[in-house]
Length: 129
Image 1 (cartoon, rainbow, N blue to C red):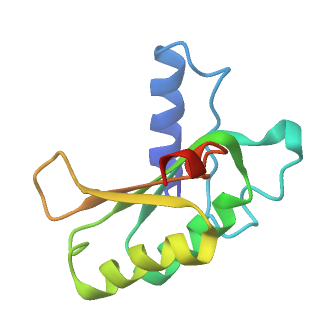
Image 2: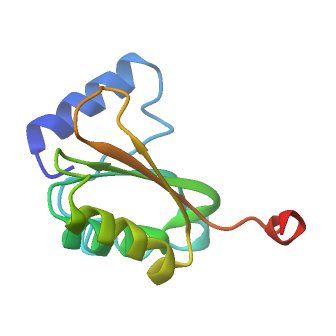
């Protein structure tokens, strides 16, 4: 989370939900300096990235891809304008650059934003081909 106040609010909500021991909220950019390089025991099951800029979004997902557990999920929340060509190009590039399986869906809020879900390929993917 880039905003300290929002991070504190997220921590309060996690605590109120009884999830504080299972979740971490990092403050800063997802550029490798915030999360660092995790060991195998520190891989994350869920990473949520909120992005305003397509290029920064791709860079953040590439960093997150190194920190995600094999069964984990990266959720990229793209602000309004996600249907614009720069966003579409960035979202298409994610799968090629990261090796992740990438699916983009419209935001359930009904605004112009989107959700991009990224996960590592399953060892069973070859069976569906």
